[in-house]
Image (cartoon, rainbow, N blue to C red; front, top):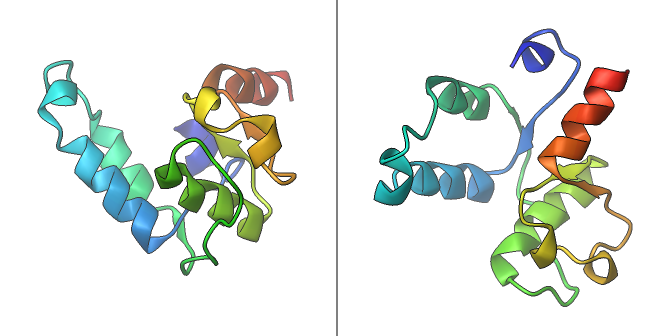
Length: 110
């Protein structure tokens, strides 16, 4: 969270992604485990809200991941995801996709 507050990292969202995050944050299966943390809503609220990008046209295992790739591509951003199997290299069209662990390791190394 400090990286966001200090301006080292910019979180980028779109209307669809914000709605998706808010829906996921309400799922009972996550609430049982103390999710979401209090800071997550703040992070979404304070993100850079961009307009919806053009739809993702490439084949992808789960169509719900298309808006994330489309936004990352439109923003020139990296996509950080814990679900790399749904974002195979062949579907990325040049978008850099990192696991949270790899993303954080890169931040800590810089």
